[in-house]
Image (cartoon, rainbow over all chains, first blue to last red; front, side, top):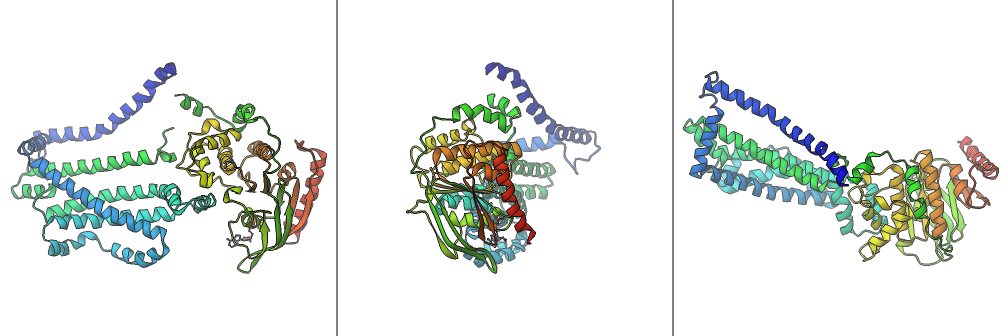
Length: 268
Length: 277
Ligand SMILES: Nc1ncnc2c1ncn2[C@@H]1O[C@H](COP(=O)(O)OP(=O)(O)O)[C@@H](O)[C@H]1O
Ligand SMILES: [Mg+2]
């Protein structure tokens, strides 16, 4: 056992490490070229500040506490909005996937509302809530609702009917059938919804914060624009990208953990 | 690491069978007389809309008999089996088992294994315990059923890594784990390759002889029918057209002249039914 382990370990470990490095080559190269282009004056710093300037701006904001506060505000809005919209979407998806009556009652209405781009509601939302927290939460929740709703519904409706029949044959109660057959069967589709919703969540928040906010990353970027602090603008954009990437990675990890049975997630 | 090595080896059905055969042949109990239930079907009818599928089936199956049902495609074999298993509603007539039955007494196995992909092999087998799923000895009973089908070492695997034959063996273990008294099979080996089929046929015969349940096997393979069954029913035009007794002793010798001539006569019944359409 130990012998076999020590022989095959290098192969198992070295490969992912090289793979992990490979994906950073291009971004690092871009940053290096960007830095050189800025320092040599090829790209004017009024158009794009050097990466070193962006890092410096970030350091200053970090020391003043402003950066952490704004990131925290945006993160909080994103999570709460996601939780609210996601839970409602999930609940409707469950109800309409499991009950014909519920689906007949609400699905058509929801499908109609879906065709309204939620960002088009911004003027209305500002009239309703002003630039209050609830305005941002409402928009994020609304944006997140539909992908979660649609994918939960789709997931439940496409669970293999033969498996459901099998569950009934073996005497599963409704609760057991849901827990052991329907929910696990719908989970891959629900994760598609979550990943999609995370993208919409950041997009909505950026737009809402740049238009109607007095704190948060989007607000920080707009403030910086007023004072022509281009390094802070670029910094905000990069932080948004980073947060988006983090959320996506988190959902991937969760997916990998809960769908380990799925052939697509089995390494061997 | 061991699992990695094992899965990297190409494993054939026959190889894995050779592995388990010595352990799986547990001391054969005296064939339980009480195990199987007799089955009486009277005037059974079933239609789907205008399509009159079963037009009066009358049938008595003694306890513990192994019956095969053959017939051309679409003649209503699956319909009959689903009615016996209580999965669909009867239009007219009756099916009785001679006494009150529990849901766990009657089990069905389909052509598709219908395993839960997100449950390990052992918990898939536990599903078969029905209302006893939550009992303390569920694990032990499921593990025992897995041993009976020779898959002890696969208990912690996901179904997706199993071969078609292994999946069907897990489905068999799930059907067996509640010690059913009637077991209905709807072309359970239809999707398997020839070698796997033969090893599965032997397995079916062995568990049937060990446990003594009443077996009803729908198949399109007449060779399989005469190799396994005590009796072969040919369904045509919604009725039992022929009722053929297979007297050959067990274990049966595949390809013997006796079985071959039976097979030929059943095939000729089927072909004449086919020609009329
Ligand atoms: N649920 C159903 N609804 C409508 N027609 C059905 C249904 N199930 C079976 N049938 C019809 O009943 C006939 C017999 O089907 P089946 O019992 O599956 O045949 P077999 O198993 O012998 O091939 C076919 O004509 C089929 O189309
Ligand atoms: Mg059929």
